[in-house]
Image (cartoon, rainbow, N blue to C red):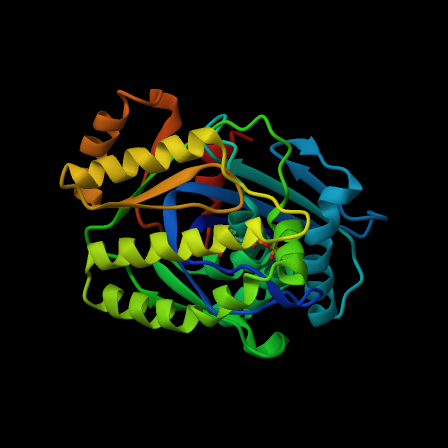
Length: 332
Ligand code: FM0
């Protein structure tokens, strides 16, 4: 019996940027994120004796071998645990607003971990699912949980996984400003490796993380949005600063990213609680009050197209879809 499994994407407030172990994907530092309702992936895995290789279909399109790389790592770990050799067909559907250009590896690999373990008949607790998702993509370890989650860096496979921190059932939201990028991008995987290997600023980044993390946890406990925003924005700026010191240097920022960051500062000058964060791409995400999402979107629509602005609220953890629910949505 195989079911569709749904996982939502997450955005880090304290970033994961650099690996201590490339193969196991053990990070250099703990990170902390908010899972969001707006973007998610549904995945179904079918182990099939007739298959000679693993197959991946993304939004109905069969993917090439390169795209299978991360997926295979998760499938192999599941086969290992279940003691099977059978190849699998993976069907995955990304629900990301059209043209958003957002990476979906966090929700994708988390949904895969859930769907693959279930299809293999393994009943894995969340902690185990988080480790499994981590092998595919580090940030996916956090998408197992709803609300705020912290990925504990650990020292080996068994000690590196995410834990829930807070349900985020208070007045916090995120507004995405989607920036279209014509430039060729550096993947987060390549970007963080180059930074760790070559940037003299990387040590400084690492040293500042414990302070940021404990301050962030206190701010979450206090439900102090202003502090959460301040710490997250500073943390993101530091992460992006490390890339400028890499060899060769690079940045994920474009002129439009800077325009968006300036727009957030302008919102602050008008009295709104609004701070930004950015990941391995040019898009800007505003941390704000959920109750002010519509108002902020309205204000920003003077400067950005409606299609560039996407509202997001705290989202739920991983879950198996009811067969009728899945049938209804997929129409098959
Ligand atoms: O999410 O090489 O998970 O903490 O998004 O697959 O382990 O794609 F801004 C960068 C995400 C990194 C920060 O890295 O890398 C964060 C980032 P992988 P991911």
